[in-house]
Image (tube, rainbow, N blue to C red; front, top):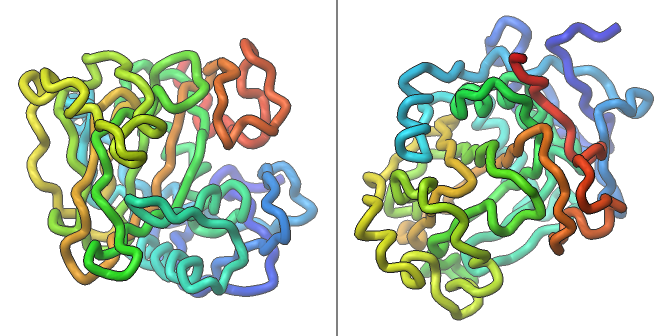
Length: 324
Protein backbone atom coordinates (compact mmCIF):
# COMPACT_ATOMS: atom_id res chain seq x y z
CA UNK A 1 0.00 0.00 0.00
CA UNK A 2 1.33 3.44 -0.89
CA UNK A 3 1.87 6.01 1.88
CA UNK A 4 -0.82 8.67 1.98
CA UNK A 5 1.62 11.43 1.10
CA UNK A 6 2.52 9.79 -2.21
CA UNK A 7 1.02 10.32 -5.61
CA UNK A 8 1.75 8.58 -8.87
CA UNK A 9 3.95 9.84 -11.67
CA UNK A 10 4.70 8.18 -15.00
CA UNK A 11 7.71 6.49 -16.44
CA UNK A 12 8.79 8.35 -19.55
CA UNK A 13 11.16 8.51 -22.45
CA UNK A 14 12.88 11.64 -21.23
CA UNK A 15 13.82 13.26 -17.95
CA UNK A 16 13.31 16.88 -17.06
CA UNK A 17 15.55 18.05 -14.20
CA UNK A 18 14.15 20.03 -11.32
CA UNK A 19 13.26 20.13 -7.65
CA UNK A 20 10.45 18.38 -5.85
CA UNK A 21 9.55 18.49 -2.20
CA UNK A 22 10.27 15.40 -0.15
CA UNK A 23 8.17 14.17 2.73
CA UNK A 24 9.74 16.69 5.11
CA UNK A 25 8.93 19.67 2.93
CA UNK A 26 12.53 20.23 1.79
CA UNK A 27 13.39 20.46 -1.89
CA UNK A 28 15.52 17.66 -3.35
CA UNK A 29 16.83 17.14 -6.86
CA UNK A 30 14.89 14.56 -8.85
CA UNK A 31 14.00 13.99 -12.48
CA UNK A 32 10.61 15.19 -13.63
CA UNK A 33 9.13 12.91 -16.22
CA UNK A 34 6.60 13.37 -18.91
CA UNK A 35 4.77 10.56 -20.65
CA UNK A 36 5.05 11.53 -24.30
CA UNK A 37 2.04 10.30 -26.24
CA UNK A 38 1.17 10.44 -29.91
CA UNK A 39 -2.40 11.20 -28.82
CA UNK A 40 -3.21 12.90 -25.54
CA UNK A 41 -5.12 10.59 -23.22
CA UNK A 42 -6.40 10.94 -19.70
CA UNK A 43 -4.11 9.33 -17.14
CA UNK A 44 -6.03 8.70 -13.93
CA UNK A 45 -3.82 8.04 -10.92
CA UNK A 46 -5.40 4.61 -10.49
CA UNK A 47 -3.44 3.12 -13.40
CA UNK A 48 -0.59 2.04 -11.17
CA UNK A 49 1.07 -0.45 -13.50
CA UNK A 50 2.32 2.36 -15.73
CA UNK A 51 3.38 4.64 -12.91
CA UNK A 52 6.04 4.96 -10.26
CA UNK A 53 5.46 6.63 -6.92
CA UNK A 54 6.80 10.05 -6.10
CA UNK A 55 6.52 12.13 -2.96
CA UNK A 56 3.78 14.69 -3.27
CA UNK A 57 4.69 18.39 -2.87
CA UNK A 58 1.68 18.66 -0.56
CA UNK A 59 3.90 19.25 2.47
CA UNK A 60 5.37 22.29 0.68
CA UNK A 61 2.01 23.91 -0.01
CA UNK A 62 1.42 26.85 2.28
CA UNK A 63 -1.67 26.51 4.49
CA UNK A 64 -4.46 29.03 4.04
CA UNK A 65 -4.87 31.38 7.00
CA UNK A 66 -7.99 33.03 8.37
CA UNK A 67 -6.70 36.31 6.94
CA UNK A 68 -6.48 34.77 3.47
CA UNK A 69 -10.00 33.37 3.77
CA UNK A 70 -11.46 36.66 5.00
CA UNK A 71 -9.87 38.60 2.13
CA UNK A 72 -11.07 36.05 -0.41
CA UNK A 73 -14.66 36.11 0.79
CA UNK A 74 -14.70 39.91 0.85
CA UNK A 75 -12.93 40.64 -2.43
CA UNK A 76 -13.40 37.47 -4.49
CA UNK A 77 -9.64 37.04 -4.79
CA UNK A 78 -6.54 36.82 -2.61
CA UNK A 79 -2.80 36.71 -3.09
CA UNK A 80 -1.02 33.95 -1.15
CA UNK A 81 2.75 34.59 -1.08
CA UNK A 82 4.83 31.42 -1.18
CA UNK A 83 1.88 29.10 -1.79
CA UNK A 84 4.35 26.79 -3.54
CA UNK A 85 7.99 26.39 -2.57
CA UNK A 86 10.07 28.65 -4.88
CA UNK A 87 12.45 25.82 -5.77
CA UNK A 88 9.52 23.75 -6.95
CA UNK A 89 8.24 26.73 -8.95
CA UNK A 90 11.69 27.01 -10.51
CA UNK A 91 11.56 23.36 -11.52
CA UNK A 92 8.14 23.93 -13.04
CA UNK A 93 9.56 26.82 -15.06
CA UNK A 94 12.27 24.53 -16.46
CA UNK A 95 9.62 22.10 -17.63
CA UNK A 96 7.48 24.92 -19.05
CA UNK A 97 10.41 26.13 -21.12
CA UNK A 98 10.85 22.60 -22.48
CA UNK A 99 7.26 22.74 -23.66
CA UNK A 100 7.83 26.12 -25.28
CA UNK A 101 10.99 24.91 -27.01
CA UNK A 102 9.11 21.98 -28.52
CA UNK A 103 11.20 19.42 -26.65
CA UNK A 104 7.99 17.81 -25.40
CA UNK A 105 5.51 16.49 -27.93
CA UNK A 106 2.18 17.88 -26.88
CA UNK A 107 -0.49 20.18 -28.21
CA UNK A 108 -0.62 23.90 -27.57
CA UNK A 109 -2.81 26.82 -28.52
CA UNK A 110 -1.64 30.24 -29.63
CA UNK A 111 -4.25 32.68 -28.40
CA UNK A 112 -4.07 36.45 -28.73
CA UNK A 113 -3.54 36.84 -25.00
CA UNK A 114 -0.96 34.03 -24.50
CA UNK A 115 0.36 30.67 -25.60
CA UNK A 116 -1.02 27.78 -23.53
CA UNK A 117 -0.37 24.10 -22.96
CA UNK A 118 -3.46 22.45 -21.45
CA UNK A 119 -3.70 19.39 -19.23
CA UNK A 120 0.03 18.99 -18.63
CA UNK A 121 -0.88 17.60 -15.20
CA UNK A 122 -3.86 15.47 -16.20
CA UNK A 123 -2.93 14.11 -19.63
CA UNK A 124 0.86 14.35 -19.71
CA UNK A 125 1.21 13.55 -15.99
CA UNK A 126 4.13 15.99 -15.97
CA UNK A 127 5.73 16.50 -12.58
CA UNK A 128 5.58 18.41 -10.36
CA UNK A 129 2.46 19.82 -12.02
CA UNK A 130 0.40 16.67 -11.50
CA UNK A 131 1.35 16.26 -7.85
CA UNK A 132 0.47 19.88 -7.18
CA UNK A 133 -2.82 19.89 -9.11
CA UNK A 134 -4.03 16.66 -7.47
CA UNK A 135 -2.68 17.37 -3.98
CA UNK A 136 -5.35 17.14 -1.26
CA UNK A 137 -3.86 20.26 0.34
CA UNK A 138 -4.51 22.20 -2.87
CA UNK A 139 -8.15 21.17 -2.73
CA UNK A 140 -8.32 21.88 0.99
CA UNK A 141 -6.94 25.38 0.36
CA UNK A 142 -9.84 26.12 -2.00
CA UNK A 143 -12.38 24.62 0.40
CA UNK A 144 -11.04 26.68 3.28
CA UNK A 145 -11.11 29.90 1.29
CA UNK A 146 -14.76 29.29 0.48
CA UNK A 147 -15.50 28.41 4.09
CA UNK A 148 -18.02 25.62 3.50
CA UNK A 149 -15.79 22.61 4.17
CA UNK A 150 -17.18 20.79 1.13
CA UNK A 151 -15.37 18.58 -1.35
CA UNK A 152 -13.32 19.94 -4.24
CA UNK A 153 -12.88 18.46 -7.71
CA UNK A 154 -10.04 19.11 -10.17
CA UNK A 155 -11.35 20.75 -13.36
CA UNK A 156 -8.43 21.69 -15.61
CA UNK A 157 -4.83 22.89 -15.72
CA UNK A 158 -2.53 24.73 -18.08
CA UNK A 159 0.86 26.33 -18.46
CA UNK A 160 0.63 29.82 -19.93
CA UNK A 161 3.21 32.16 -21.42
CA UNK A 162 2.26 35.79 -22.05
CA UNK A 163 4.91 36.92 -24.52
CA UNK A 164 6.26 40.47 -24.76
CA UNK A 165 3.78 42.49 -26.79
CA UNK A 166 6.50 44.03 -28.98
CA UNK A 167 7.87 40.63 -30.02
CA UNK A 168 6.83 38.80 -33.16
CA UNK A 169 3.53 37.08 -32.35
CA UNK A 170 3.49 38.98 -29.07
CA UNK A 171 0.62 38.53 -26.63
CA UNK A 172 -2.21 41.00 -26.19
CA UNK A 173 -4.05 42.11 -23.09
CA UNK A 174 -6.52 39.66 -21.54
CA UNK A 175 -10.02 41.11 -21.62
CA UNK A 176 -12.13 41.44 -18.49
CA UNK A 177 -14.18 38.28 -18.01
CA UNK A 178 -15.54 35.71 -15.56
CA UNK A 179 -14.54 32.04 -15.62
CA UNK A 180 -17.82 30.42 -14.57
CA UNK A 181 -20.10 31.26 -17.54
CA UNK A 182 -17.74 29.51 -19.96
CA UNK A 183 -17.94 26.09 -18.32
CA UNK A 184 -20.69 23.41 -18.40
CA UNK A 185 -21.11 23.33 -14.62
CA UNK A 186 -24.39 23.78 -12.79
CA UNK A 187 -23.18 25.48 -9.62
CA UNK A 188 -20.82 28.21 -8.50
CA UNK A 189 -17.88 27.31 -6.29
CA UNK A 190 -14.28 26.26 -6.38
CA UNK A 191 -11.57 28.66 -7.52
CA UNK A 192 -8.90 29.37 -10.09
CA UNK A 193 -5.34 29.11 -8.74
CA UNK A 194 -2.78 31.19 -10.68
CA UNK A 195 0.81 30.31 -9.71
CA UNK A 196 3.77 32.44 -10.79
CA UNK A 197 6.67 30.35 -12.12
CA UNK A 198 9.03 33.31 -12.43
CA UNK A 199 9.18 36.86 -11.09
CA UNK A 200 6.12 38.76 -12.33
CA UNK A 201 5.84 42.55 -12.29
CA UNK A 202 2.72 44.57 -13.16
CA UNK A 203 4.27 45.70 -16.45
CA UNK A 204 4.26 42.06 -17.60
CA UNK A 205 0.49 41.94 -17.41
CA UNK A 206 -0.03 40.55 -13.94
CA UNK A 207 -3.60 39.70 -12.99
CA UNK A 208 -6.08 42.42 -12.04
CA UNK A 209 -9.44 41.91 -10.37
CA UNK A 210 -12.61 43.91 -9.76
CA UNK A 211 -12.73 43.44 -6.01
CA UNK A 212 -16.11 42.25 -4.82
CA UNK A 213 -17.43 41.60 -8.33
CA UNK A 214 -18.27 37.98 -7.49
CA UNK A 215 -21.46 39.47 -6.04
CA UNK A 216 -22.54 40.70 -9.49
CA UNK A 217 -23.63 37.21 -10.54
CA UNK A 218 -22.93 35.54 -13.90
CA UNK A 219 -22.52 38.13 -16.65
CA UNK A 220 -22.29 35.90 -19.71
CA UNK A 221 -19.72 34.26 -21.93
CA UNK A 222 -17.02 36.61 -23.16
CA UNK A 223 -14.71 34.04 -24.75
CA UNK A 224 -17.04 33.92 -27.75
CA UNK A 225 -18.20 37.54 -27.81
CA UNK A 226 -15.52 39.48 -25.97
CA UNK A 227 -12.40 41.43 -26.87
CA UNK A 228 -10.52 38.34 -28.05
CA UNK A 229 -12.84 38.07 -31.05
CA UNK A 230 -13.32 41.78 -31.64
CA UNK A 231 -16.23 42.26 -29.27
CA UNK A 232 -16.55 44.00 -25.93
CA UNK A 233 -15.17 42.77 -22.63
CA UNK A 234 -17.27 42.86 -19.46
CA UNK A 235 -16.20 46.32 -18.27
CA UNK A 236 -17.16 47.71 -21.67
CA UNK A 237 -20.44 45.81 -21.78
CA UNK A 238 -21.37 46.79 -18.22
CA UNK A 239 -19.85 50.19 -17.31
CA UNK A 240 -21.49 50.02 -13.87
CA UNK A 241 -19.00 47.30 -12.90
CA UNK A 242 -16.18 49.87 -12.76
CA UNK A 243 -18.37 52.22 -10.74
CA UNK A 244 -19.31 49.60 -8.18
CA UNK A 245 -16.18 47.46 -7.89
CA UNK A 246 -12.63 48.88 -7.57
CA UNK A 247 -9.71 47.51 -9.56
CA UNK A 248 -7.19 45.65 -7.41
CA UNK A 249 -3.77 47.23 -6.80
CA UNK A 250 -0.95 46.32 -9.23
CA UNK A 251 0.38 42.89 -8.27
CA UNK A 252 3.99 41.74 -8.22
CA UNK A 253 4.66 38.06 -7.60
CA UNK A 254 7.70 35.94 -6.90
CA UNK A 255 8.12 32.31 -8.01
CA UNK A 256 5.64 30.20 -6.06
CA UNK A 257 3.31 33.08 -5.16
CA UNK A 258 -0.30 32.45 -6.13
CA UNK A 259 -3.56 34.26 -6.56
CA UNK A 260 -6.89 32.55 -5.99
CA UNK A 261 -10.04 33.98 -7.50
CA UNK A 262 -13.73 33.10 -7.33
CA UNK A 263 -15.31 31.81 -10.59
CA UNK A 264 -17.56 34.89 -10.75
CA UNK A 265 -14.85 37.47 -10.03
CA UNK A 266 -14.31 39.74 -13.02
CA UNK A 267 -10.62 39.76 -13.91
CA UNK A 268 -8.21 40.53 -16.71
CA UNK A 269 -4.58 41.39 -17.42
CA UNK A 270 -2.71 44.00 -19.39
CA UNK A 271 -0.31 43.31 -22.22
CA UNK A 272 3.26 42.34 -21.41
CA UNK A 273 5.20 45.59 -21.85
CA UNK A 274 8.57 44.14 -20.83
CA UNK A 275 11.11 42.04 -22.70
CA UNK A 276 10.52 38.96 -20.48
CA UNK A 277 7.80 36.33 -20.93
CA UNK A 278 5.27 35.99 -18.11
CA UNK A 279 5.01 32.35 -17.02
CA UNK A 280 2.26 30.80 -14.93
CA UNK A 281 0.64 27.49 -14.05
CA UNK A 282 -3.13 27.66 -13.66
CA UNK A 283 -5.34 25.06 -11.99
CA UNK A 284 -9.10 25.33 -11.79
CA UNK A 285 -11.22 23.55 -9.18
CA UNK A 286 -14.98 23.12 -8.89
CA UNK A 287 -17.30 21.77 -6.18
CA UNK A 288 -17.06 17.98 -5.88
CA UNK A 289 -20.83 17.61 -6.27
CA UNK A 290 -21.01 19.66 -9.49
CA UNK A 291 -23.37 18.41 -12.20
CA UNK A 292 -22.74 18.48 -15.96
CA UNK A 293 -25.12 20.82 -17.80
CA UNK A 294 -24.40 19.53 -21.30
CA UNK A 295 -23.32 22.94 -22.61
CA UNK A 296 -20.73 22.80 -25.37
CA UNK A 297 -17.17 22.84 -24.04
CA UNK A 298 -14.09 21.37 -25.79
CA UNK A 299 -12.76 19.58 -22.70
CA UNK A 300 -16.01 17.69 -22.10
CA UNK A 301 -17.68 17.27 -25.50
CA UNK A 302 -16.09 13.90 -26.31
CA UNK A 303 -16.04 12.26 -22.89
CA UNK A 304 -19.46 10.64 -22.96
CA UNK A 305 -20.77 12.65 -20.02
CA UNK A 306 -24.51 12.74 -19.38
CA UNK A 307 -26.28 16.08 -18.81
CA UNK A 308 -27.74 16.22 -15.34
CA UNK A 309 -25.26 13.69 -13.94
CA UNK A 310 -22.23 14.32 -11.69
CA UNK A 311 -18.75 14.51 -13.17
CA UNK A 312 -17.98 10.89 -12.29
CA UNK A 313 -15.09 10.57 -14.71
CA UNK A 314 -11.32 10.04 -14.29
CA UNK A 315 -10.73 13.35 -16.07
CA UNK A 316 -12.09 15.19 -13.03
CA UNK A 317 -10.88 13.54 -9.82
CA UNK A 318 -11.98 14.69 -6.39
CA UNK A 319 -8.84 16.00 -4.71
CA UNK A 320 -10.44 16.95 -1.39
CA UNK A 321 -13.27 14.91 0.09
CA UNK A 322 -14.44 17.67 2.40
CA UNK A 323 -14.57 18.21 6.13
CA UNK A 324 -18.04 16.86 6.70
